[in-house]
Length: 401
Image 1 (cartoon, helix red, strand yellow):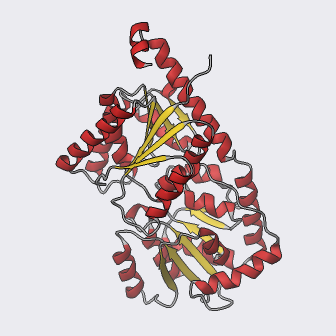
Image 2 (cartoon, rainbow, N blue to C red):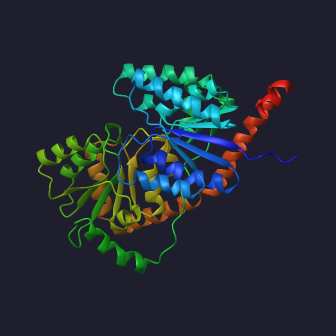
Image 3 (cartoon, helix red, strand yellow):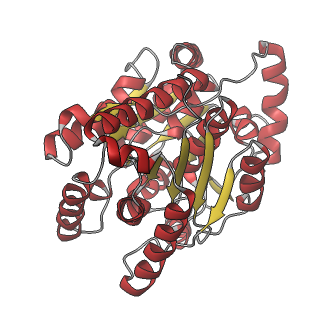
C-alpha cells in the first residue's frame, strides 16, 4: 500500500548560524523527495540575510510560518509562544514535529505533545548545558533535557559526540538516539589557476593589502565561540605581515572591539561583520581557524574543509573525527599562545599548508552528500511512525489517519 507523504514541521528559534545552514540544506531536499515540509521559525535574531533565507526556503517548496521566540527564558512570552505553536501544530495535523536547538526544543516538544503529534524528533545542535553562563544554569539545562527526553521519540545528533552525550547523561534511551551529521553541499571544482586569480582580488575586497597572508575566523560573536582567544593570538603571533579577519556578528562585538583597541591591533585584526558570501571569504583566506570547544559539529570547519583550506581547530573529540592532526588539519588546545604558535608554524610552511588543505578537501568529499542524508532522515521518521503504529490501538489508529 502506498503511504501518503509525510507531513512534517521543523521548529527553530535559532534561525541563524549552523542551525540555518542545516535547515537550508536539508529541508529543500525533503520537499524535493515528496515530503510535505513546513518550517516554524523565529526572526527575532536580526541579521542581514534573514528575509532572503525565508524566501529561498519558500521557493524550494517549504511552507514557512513565523512565531517569534525569545532566546532566553521569559515565562510570560514563552507561555504565549507555546500556545501559538500548539495551535499551529494541532491545526496542521503533522506526522512529525522536529525541533532544532535549545529554545525550540523546549517549547516545540511541549507543543508537539499537546497538539498530539505522532512523532517528536529533536536535534540539539550543541546542547545548551555545554555553553551556559554558569554551572547552575548548566545543571538547570541538563535537568530540562532529561525531562524533555521523556516526550521525545528520537534524538538526532549532528555528531557522534552529541549523541553520546545524550546517552551518557540519560536524557534519552540509547536505542532512541541516532546520528545524522551536518549536511553541506560540495562546491564546483576549480583549477589552481582560477583559485590563485581570485585569491588576491577577494583579499583586497576585505581591505587586505596585496601580498599579505590572511588568517580567518568565521563565527558568531558569542562567548562560547572563544573569539577573544583569536584576537589575543593575533597579538602574540610572530607573523608580522598576517592580517586576521573575524567574519561574524553578535552580542560580543563590543568586547571584541575593546580587545582589539587595548592590544593596539587595529591594523592587524579586521572585523568585516556578517559575511554572506563564504566562497569569497574563503578565496581570500590562507589559513582558517576555529577556536570553539563547544559545538555539535562545526559548520565553520566543514565549510573550510569544503574549500580545501588548511585549518587550525580546537582539539575536541568531534574535530578529531573531522580532521586528522598533521594530516588534514592542525588541532590545538585553544589558548592564545597555542593558536598563535600554530598560525606561525603553518604560515611559515607553504607546502605543509597546501597538503593539509588538500587532505581536508578530500575528507569532506568522502562524506555522504545532502541527498543521502535527507533520505536517511526520512527513513528515521518512517521507522518512528511505524513503531508508533505498532504501539497504537487500532481504533486510535483510525482516528489518527
